[in-house]
Each structure stands twice: as C-alpha cells, then as structure tokens.
Length: 353
Image 1: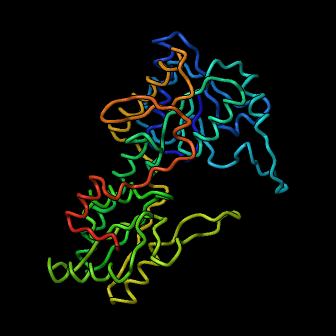
Image 2: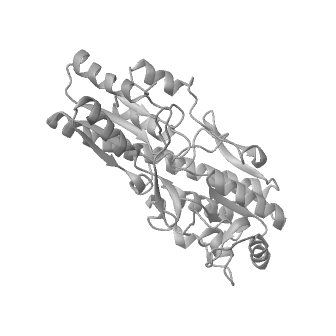
Image 3: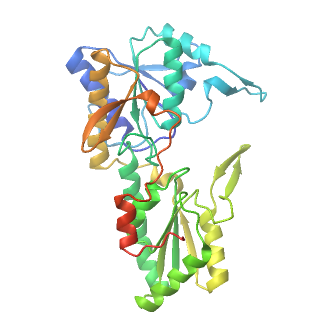
C-alpha cells in the first residue's frame, strides 16, 4: 500500500486498519511503499514491512503518514532535473512487478486516484483506492479522510480570533485551503460563526461584503466581524490570487487582498490569518479515525474477495464502493442548493453575491 498527494490527519489510522485486517482477517502480508510513486521510481523501490508490532503505539493518533508521500512528479509527465518532461510510467510498472505484489491499496485525493488507477491498469495489478483530502472534493463520497479534522482546526482558529476581533473592534479574515471547492471554508464558517464566507463556487462582490459588515454593526450592534475565505475565492470579473513557488503557481493571498479592499472601501480595521498547512497536521479527530479505520478494513476485504478497480466511499452513513472510472476526472463542488448552503443562508451569512 501507499499514500499519495498532500498529507492529512487520519492517514496512519487507515494504514493501521489495512494491516490489521489483512493479517488478522486474511493472513496476508502487507508491504508499505515509501514516498508514493517517487519510491517506485527508485531502484530498488523504497519499501518498508508493515507488521502488527509497528502499530502497538501511538500511530493511530499521529498526523501525517508514516509511509511518506509526494504531491508532484506525475510519472506520466515527469519533470527531469534538466527540465525535460518524460513518461516514466513504465519504470513504475517495472517496480510494481519487481515487488511481486498481488494488489495495491492507494490512499489519495482525486489527482492521485487518477494517476494510480492508470498505473495499475498498465501494470495489470488489482487496485483499490481510499479517498483522503482536507478539501473534501473527491466525488461520490460524502467525506474523505482528513476533512473533519481540518474543519475542527479552522473552527478552533475562529474561536480564538473572535475575542480579539471583539476586543479591538476589527474585521478578522481567516484564509483556509480549498483549491477548486469551498467545502472546508463553508463548514468551518458555519461552525465558527462567520458573517461572510467566500468560496470558489461563488465569485464575490466586494460591495456586498462591505454592506454586510455595515449591517452587522447596525442590526446586531456588533463592532466586529468574522470572514472565512477559501484560498481560491475570487472577485466577480476578477481572478484568484496566486503566488510563485519553485516555478509553479499556487493559490494564496486572497485574504490579504480582501483585507486591503475592505479597509479601503469602509475604513474598517482588518487583520488576516492564513492557516495554511496547519489544517493538515495534528492528531486526527475521532470521526476521521473511525472513517479511516472503516475505509481500511473495507478496502482489504474488497481485494481479498477479488474485487478491484474500486474506491471505497462513505455514503448515507455507511461504507460502500464505487467504480474508479466514475471518480477520476470528475469534480465535487459545493452544492449551492444543498443543506449546508441553506443553513448558512438561513443564518444570514453573506457569500458576496
């Protein structure tokens, strides 16, 4: 098994569940592939044995992934040190065959699922995927591993910002992750009592946000306000804000732009907090531990019964599995008519529209 893409809390709980179920339930041996596809591009491949004694301590409670992970270096279009882009997928396939694997369980987000699914089809190796991402944007599952913990981190941040906002009569802006979808910002904003939530699915009008801040002051007699914005939120007739890192464009900076614009238009004193990778780390919530454990057990049972090309999924309160071909290249945006949006609108939260 391997973990792929950005890390999050709950990955080790899933690894533990896979190993325990494989050994106790099916008398199978489990090999961990280190650093995802990067480990499979090494010769020999980077691996570690996963036995029961590895999980006798606090692994269940720890963040990150004991196997390591990468979120770049797609083997189908791999950038070499000289900048050349080449297809190294055949090297991954050779490594898989070198390890004599009977099947692979991969824990990843939507991008990782697509890459791993294609690689295992090429290698003709049974594959089952487990969804993880704090963005919660993997299709056909209500929740992915890591989402609930990240929401808790962002909600706690708002709990800490609110007293300072009230004490200094400020507008506090919290920027969360969320590249294509606003699930994290939406849930954290509702839980944390936000006055404004900005998500990629709804381009915002800065005038509407300023008006909401004024309404809070007049209607609620409150001299402070809380705003949550996803990193990919963007203004109407504008673009998302990017930063340059190692030659790549990454989201970041929308909260600072928003703070500047609000102060310019209203005179309100603003302060910005960017959570960044704090949302990925830390001990997983109880829900994420249960979710990861349930996914791990189910994934092993699928492979052991000869069912593959599937992704485990949490749907309507229970675990099921879905065809991977219905997941890859699909998107899961916030349902603008869904229950969370209805709740937020009902609470009077402004989305800048």
